[in-house]
Image (cartoon, rainbow, N blue to C red; front, side, top):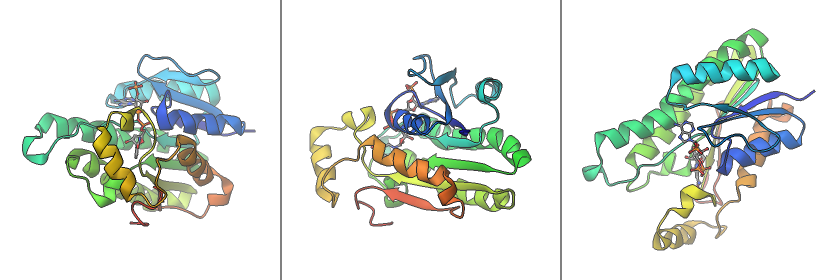
Length: 234
Ligand code: NDP
């Protein structure tokens, strides 16, 4: 029987590719959305990850539908780019809230049941810029770097219960998020990627699926780059 999987922000982009990848191998997959509804074949729960009460409700619905979450993918994320000297505190705080504090919220909610079941997989979608830095993205890069400390601390806290916590750090992936970048910036980025192209979201999904599999049972606290060589392993 398949696992019970929850992907935050699984309604589109990388999250959707991840959700589909688990569904294809026969897992029960739930995705969060903020009103757009769930993609076909998936169980959708409405949830804004900046709202702890909404997270609690969403988990309760998922538990009712497919049992406790065994594999959690913390994927939902936003950008609010701007140079430091012009960045409003609100833009810094909002990005940290959606990208990092939300990961703490969903991990905490999931961990209670994982500890009881003595098995779990926590996977965080970070970014190559978390470790490389990125001009104009102090908020985003800080939030993505923060996921590394979060995951590694959880790996230490919960390892004795066979719960692993790992980070996937994609480079540039062809989604709505990157489509928004100005053309000149897109060209500049591709010039720095040894593989010379954006990732396909499925290439991120494959690594996430591996980290959730039995074959990855001894991997925890890892940061796995999927970036076409942009970060050179960081
Ligand atoms: P998209 O912008 O295509 O999708 C973002 C997803 O996050 C959507 O499902 C969105 O939901 C959800 N989301 C955003 N804020 C919230 C919130 N407060 N509560 C619930 N859901 C929320 O992004 P990508 O698919 O490109 O990115 C997915 C993850 O991968 C992000 O964490 C991103 O930082 C990371 N990443 C992306 C890269 C890229 O090149 N695209 C590179 C490296 C990392 P909704 O549909 O409701 O808006």
